[in-house]
Amino acid sequence: MYRVVSNQLLAPGIRLLTVIAPQVAAKAQPGQFIILRVDEKGERASFPLVDWDRSQGTVSFSFQERDRTTAKLAALTPGASVLNLMGPLGHPSAIGQHGQVLAVAEGMGIATLFGVARAFREVGSQVVALLGAAHDDGLFWQGRWQAISHQLVPVTENGSSGRQGSVAQELGKMLSSPEAGRPDVVVVRGSTPTMAEVCEVTRPLGIKTVVSIHSLMFDGFGICGGCRITVDGAVRLVCLDGPDFDGHKVDWEEIRRREMAYPPGLPMS
Image 1 (tube, one colour):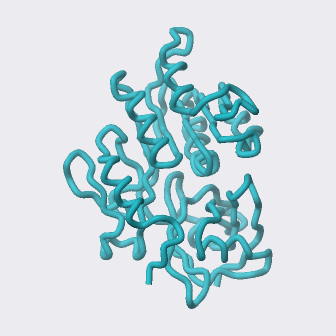
Image 2: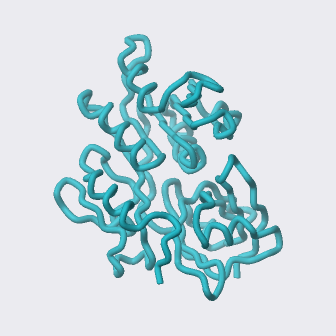
């Protein structure tokens, strides 16, 4: 049993759950994920790690409330427990010193990319953050991002805060501006359409673009095959080979078809 410390609402439908899991916290690194079961009748579900506190033995992960499992997680209060929690899983993000890292985050990605961007800053990279949401109430953690970024660019689709447009549109404008400079790498977290669009912006410019894929998975050991994707023409398993991949080599159409076949909320048994 893993006791809940806090359950925060970050934005409409997006929450951050913190639980006591000292063994996971001791080994967690940026870019990894966990798999859990809420209760004995619950399904196994994966969630990206957001942060951890080794001294307190806690880990935090984010989720969007959109199905039976995430509704159960949203209802948990401090003192409640999660039945099973396994991790950290997946390869950590490749953190290295670069002249400029352009961090592009949309929606829940604002939370899941934060630890990765912070790690780049800690090794001496210049971090430019491009954060996007549909409305201003979806732009959370701007203070946290400001503290680790050399430049912060907020974007909303309806123009209620920051610049108006999508993160892909704004990225295109930034990269076409001679004053902006050329990033060494773009790291992006967001919905499948957003990550695919960002990759199409950076592809003709030859800018390395790293995405994080979270396909449907159950075991986390490559047995079920539910998280298989195609990268550079070869089959890869997100749980074993990812979750980070070269976005220019991912078969995005295959992922879209998979998501249409298994939409959020579809019963898996």
